Amino acid sequence: MSQVPSAILGIGAFRFCQASKRAATGLAARPKLRAIKDADRHLLLTRAYFTIKPTSRAGWYELRFGSARIPGGTILFRAHREFVVPAMVSVTLTSKALFVSMSYEETEQKQFPETEKEMLERLRQYSEEELIACGNGIDRGVVRPVQTSNDPEPYALTEDQLERIRRKERQRKHYQKRMARCEKGSRNRAKMRRKVARTFDYRKNVINDFAHQTSHALVSDDKVQFFVLEDLRVKNMTKRPEPKYDDNAKALPNGARAKAGLNRAILSSGWGKTEEYLKYKAKKAGKLVIKVEPAYTSQRCPKCGRVERKNRPSQSEFRCVSCGFESANA
Image (cartoon, rainbow, N blue to C red; front, side, top):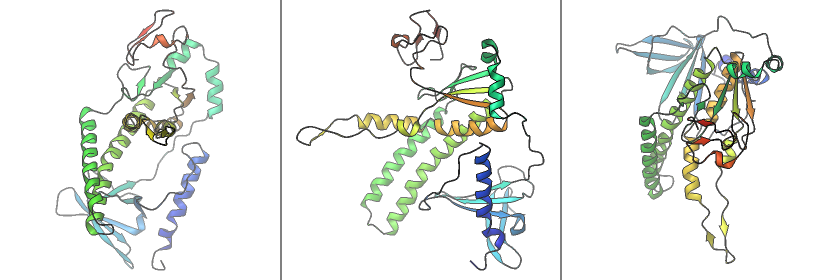
């Protein structure tokens, strides 16, 4: 540790300070400790401790760590777009590969004069018609992951992405079976363990990209000043069902297999990530995210307000038994 430059050692404190500032302004949750086992490894370098040079291969570059006095090694990376020398470089080691990302100094940071409380007070003065015009209701489901009130087409993963996720799940089960037959502590078991970890990377990356693109598209609508979301507890919704036993302590069917399928569908929809990214992007854009109680929202008529179970004859249909209102976006 004595040979590591003090600036590198201080980056951890810098990142914690930045995360705490974001939490204080409401752009993110408070930073918390995470288990280092099986976690991605991150290395953050300032401009004084790295150099980037092009190689003879088109699109490939050499990233050299350290300084002239204390060299730290090199890696090769392929750039997917043109870039200039960044202020900071982040190298992430996952179970799949090394990833290089670059950070640049912000020349101008847009500041909004209104606080969240002031925006709420201003919106309270709007009429019902004005609120409908500048608001966007968002419904999240399994069939339609993100359905908005302003657009009849839902935001969802493509069929190719869903098929690749299913293919990766089949590969994962295959590797897990092979790993179970390997001797504990052996190299083959470690190799299978890495392959199992890589099968999770594709779904994680696809859902992360989907959440970023969806939240960006929602916030980019200049007509919208606030978003309304159901306050879904995704963690509670994806819990395992409690086991059931008869009088002789024999296990009874508890729907665990069906619940596991529903849990996979919910987790593959990106509900939580989309909400997380929408919150901080809306905050930076000077817009509000309002959460409402989800109970009976699928049975409540948006026109007359009547709550009736018969209003929803099926998942894809909505027909109010009181006023006759129908919706194609159910």
